[in-house]
Amino acid sequence: MESSRNRKGAQSIQRAISLLRAVARHNEKGAALSKIAAEAGLHVATAHRMLSALVQEGLVTQDPISKLYYLGIELFLLGGAAQQFTIRNQLRSALERIAGETGDTVFLLIRSGNDVLCIDRVEGKFPIRTIMIDIGARRPLGIGAGSLALIAFLPDDQFQAILSANASRYAQYQNLTAEDIRKLAAISRKQGYVVSEGLFHEGVTSLGVPIFNRQKKVIAAITVSSISQRMDGKRCQEIVQMVRKVTRLEGTTSLRKTPKQKN
Image (cartoon, rainbow, N blue to C red; front, side, top):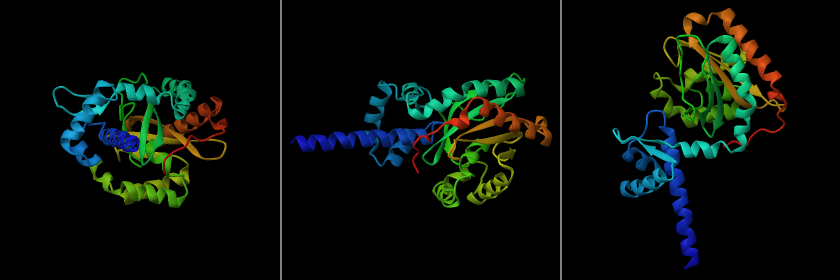
């Protein structure tokens, strides 16, 4: 009897995690109950009951008008205690300095499985601001300059595995393909950073700069985004050099351990 209860308890936890992951995949635009249930492999009634419990705990939120589900603030607060979020604390002043000197919007991104996760953002004072992704939002790895910077410098077998896993998801972003991502990654490796000129967002140029630890592993990426008119070749180079300099001053490259990541 006790063993049976334990199994049911473990199953409930696994189902709840599946629901959270399904919501996370669509957090930017929100997800309907039917879609979440289908992706989690649950009956709609079961998914609804469990989502209601997650809403009560603040782990999920539901828009009262559209009825779409999003990740809740409580989940983000819990995540703030995780080891990987020490990166956010360490780089916060660097982001503020970069945004202050460039006037542009700066994002801090990390890897979470086959997704990129935005964990911080600082807006510059330039009147026209480019808010490409919200804190807590996820996208497939490879979509976005910083997102691509997280994987472009991985060993080729790991890079190809991520592209294969996300290939079916890329089409919803400007009808991109895995081959488009692969080509941009090849160019990025040669120059040491990613430049996206309107590829992911029309009229916006973004720079993705990988942040390495002492073991030469990418632990995060910083993205600087602005309207394309402000981002000529010379200014792009200046911003990249600034990002590298500021992160060195903040001691980022002295991190001795890389947070564990899902492959």
